Length: 180
Image 1 (cartoon, rainbow, N blue to C red):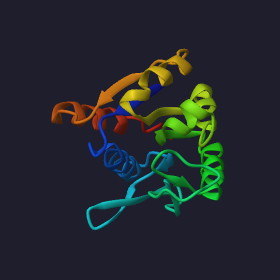
Image 2 (image 1 turned 180 degrees about the vertical axis):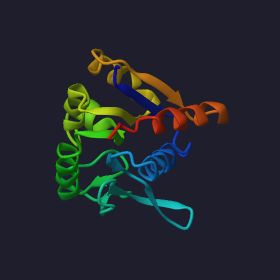
Image 3 (image 1 turned 45 degrees about the vertical axis):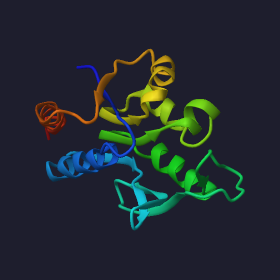
Image 4 (image 1 turned 120 degrees about the vertical axis):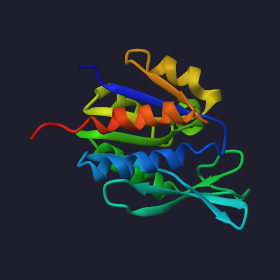
């Protein structure tokens, strides 16, 4: 049976990270070996002040990026990235497989436009040492991602997902349980 490679996309604030976390929690409740990273936003009131990175196997959380304009060795237009957390995330992904469900939130501009960040995730996806993967990719980066990953089958889910599609995604992932 071919691997499932689910690409989750949607505008900012559409719930991509929340859905990844929910799916990972549901998978674990079903005894599914889930690994990878989720990166929830950090808020101060209603203002987004940063992004954290959470290892799905250990629940360890580290600050990934700060929303500011301070100089840094690694930054994008709006964020200053912690290079130690990036290195930690690379190591988390390097040891994530084999697993049943691999979650990568997200493959973004650092990886697809600059060859930095968690660029190792692209090789890990290519190796396919998992039953299913959920990968968050921004809508404006889908073409670049598809081009790089042209050798593997991809299923696209765009949020907001209609409830029947979300239920179908959850149900399909929960059937990943391996015998034994």
